[in-house]
Length: 229
Image 1 (cartoon, rainbow, N blue to C red):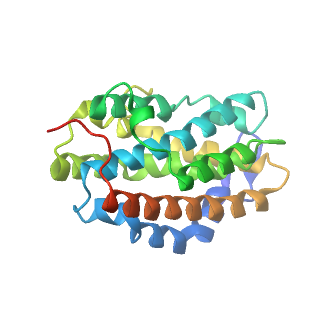
Image 2 (image 1 turned 90 degrees about the vertical axis):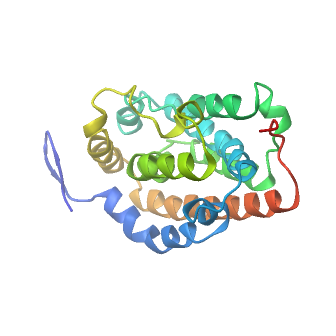
């Protein structure tokens, strides 16, 4: 798939290459750990809260990294979108279990490893962050509304507990997904080593799978610090 640009046609679609490279991992992710529980409607509130708490660190590193490289030709395109999911997750966690969620809900080793890997991707020219933006933000834009409805139905979550999936504050939400996909492609086309981005995408999915499994295992053996319902 080619991408139209002001200068003509870009020959490489990083989004397409990431999709092809991670397709099997994507299917594995949907069948693994707490993500599988969520999709099958069997997840607990504790498990979902634990997942959110551990994703928060990764999102924060993605957003810090993109901001750090906002003057670069590629990542600057992504910085313009200001999707900023980390504050949304923090708001959800506050509404779910109180303002002291960072102290009460554990950051698992798998969550630390995910955040650390994102921070490493931000080093140098930072273009490997494109893979993490693809994995998280495009995933949220593609399936977030479905997840929000499912979580509201199975866990009784309220809109103020589902801010992660709410992009209504972004200009032109109806076209956001397509626009962001194009921005990812243009950012990838400006990168000196697109192949490194593709492999980083595979790593990102592997880290997500490991985190999902770790959250499921932890929540099945202990109770996260949620207020009584």
